Length: 301
Image (cartoon, rainbow, N blue to C red):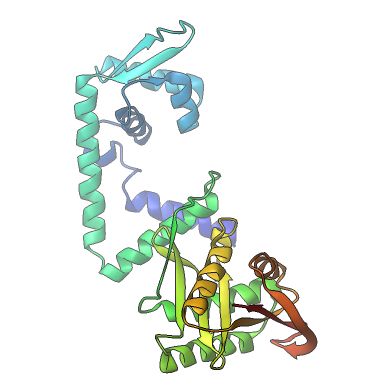
């Protein structure tokens, strides 16, 4: 079923963006030829071997395409000055004009596609495409992220993402999602802005993590709902969220920051230990459809 879904999407999307047409974007160039022009348009000169590796093309196939483009006066090939065994390729003036025309046509076509959608649907589309790239791209994930307060709609994301991830990773049932929903609703309804705060970790324009700092009593704050999406793990986001919670709790005048977790959450427990929390007590309990061992951790401020 998953194979069929991916194949169906491929058929839909290639038709939707017009790559099945004889000439891409109503030009004389195939999709592969247009991509060659685009890659060469990003730099002055490129080694043919590097171009082949960049596009994942067969050497003979690339050679035939370059010969065709050279015959049309769009590219020029030459031996590298520092190594005669290496061949380099660059766009001619006509090639750069063709590349600029393709770029403009592509921009207009995608602009028209997006203009037909509402703003929310445009955001959904771009986020879904980013998700596909994140899953399939073998390159290291980007490391630039920001921490900020939640925006409208993101409190719902906190609830939904907790419910989905904990069900998938630990088999917890819907009662956990209900607990998260109550915690979030209480925070929104009763928040004391001077003593309570929430943060969203944003990566490439979308939420990938969260944490709350709430008042337990006059002297004690509680860290709640720490979460990092699997796509963003390994970037230090969890530790950074905990650090921000600690910083806020100190500035708000609390004497102690506590939290409750479960022993199966090993990654989270390592983050708490590195941040200076110590285990206070542990007790078995039956919650969320599972037998668990709850743990209370704390840190003096």
